[in-house]
Image 1: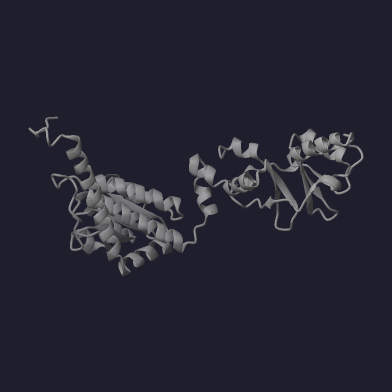
Image 2: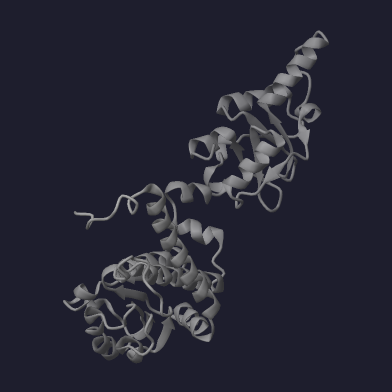
Length: 337
């Protein structure tokens, strides 16, 4: 496309960077201004979303619709059941998805978007409530809504003042603020978040020790009083790299690793003996070893293992009984190392 006879100075790197910085600064100022204006309507909207017994249905057209789809996705991933409903599809039958217990969040900066306004009467007849995100609180959309969230009279950062830029940024930021406020009201915890993010980098960060650790046959235990040789055999048979020592009540009282074995062999070789048949595991095990619970995040376990320079860590339940064994190789396998 032609540059409309722009001068070389207008196309110089410094001039282009100045334009880009101005866009970012305009949008940042608009979001900062919106933050100072939040009040009772915002809190009321958050309560409507939190108490919604159906789905939070987000709709919007064009750029506002793309923002709405992202807001809906953020709501869904943070504990609020939601889906995006395209206004054109809604007018051609998809309004059948709407239920009286649903809450509709409609985005339109002008508040006059024809495709959105066409849905207002049908939404009312269905019985769903309506929250409007708009920059014009006197618009038809705002007048029809049960609650209005005003994003303010922003000026678009577009040099022509036409392309939705600042307006969509403030709507997106307000949607994020709304979703995360509702998330906080729901006491949405990391383990809740993990249920909805099983894949990718987020999923890996939210894996628990219990999901990664070795257990059962792969996490051997021996009773106190076992010969060291037999304990080593248990480690070798399972290729676990460590063995847990339990007392008569099944409580973990000691931990023994491959590293401990190497140190013991070197010590005994220095004294002219490497006989493993005589000593008991009790004589060489680590008493009161560092442990972690299966409900802890695997990233926490990794931090502890790095801090204490451990290749394996014992996993115990709340009663102190062995629940499993976590090896650095297990963390490597899931991509945390």
